[in-house]
Image (cartoon, rainbow, N blue to C red; front, side, top):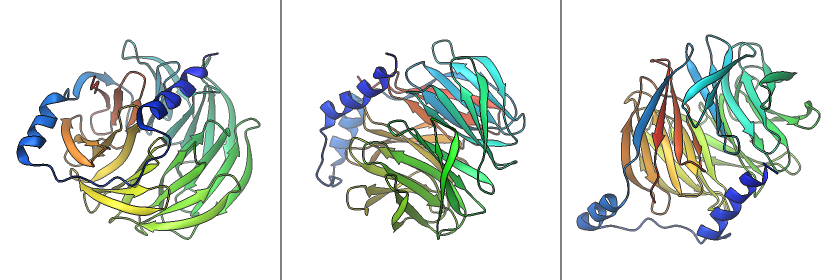
Length: 339
C-alpha cells in the first residue's frame, strides 16, 4: 500500500541515525575543517519558482503522492502543486484566511487552519474535494498531524488552547487550555507522541502528551518564538525566534535546551529532513532560508528566495524544500540533495 512509503522513510532514517542518541554537543571546528566540510557537501539551490494566488502562507507536503499544498490567505484556497512538474494542478476553496496546512500521508487527508472563521477544512487528497469543516478555537493558527494516531492538533492564537481532532471521524475530541499567550505553531513527534506548541508573546514552548492530551512542561526559548520543527529520529526540536534572530535547539528526551543557533533576520518557521538531518529556517526580513546541519548545529548554507517567506516544508523523499513567499506570491523550490 502507498502509505508504506511514509513508514519506510521513517524506518530508513532510523537505520541511518539510530533509534536513540546521546545528547549532541556542537564540536568546535577549525576554520580549515569548516571550509572542507562545506565544500564536500552539495549546496542547496533554488530550482524553480512557482506563481500562486495572493498571499501564500502555510504549506505541507505529502511525500507519498509528491503533492504540495499551499494555503493562500487572500484567495481563501489551497493550491495543489505537482512536485514532479512544479506546476499548480488544482485549486481548492477552503475557509477564510487559511494560515497553515498539515497533511496526513497515510490517509491522504489535508487539513487547513482557517483563522478568519475559526475552522479547519478537511480535503480528500485523492480528488481534492472538501469532506468536512470542523469548528476549532478562536483564531486558528498552527496545525499539525500525528499520522500514526490520526490525531490533528490545532493551535488557537486568541483562545490560547489546542483543539484535538479525531481524523477518522472529523470530530473534536477535546480542547487543551494552555498558559502561554499567542500560539503560533504546532509540531508533533509521531514516534514519541509529543505535541510541541510555540507561544510568541510568552517566549516558551509547551510540550503536550498526545496519549492523554495532558500538559507536560514548558521550555523557555528565545524572543518571540514562531515556528517549530521536529526531527522524530534524533528527537530534537527546533524553535525559530523571530525577535532574537536565532533557533533554539531542544533535546526532546529531557526537554532541555542544547544550544542556540544564529540565523537570518526575523526567522519565521523551521522544517526538518529526518533522512539528511538538516534543518531549514525561513527568514522573513532577509528573504532567505538558513540551512543548519543537525549533527553539529552549524549553519552550512543560506539560500535566497522570494519576498517575505514565512512557512516552509520538506519532502524527505525528494530532498526538496517548498517556501511560499507572501510578498511575491510565489513558491520557491529548493533542492538540497547532499548525496
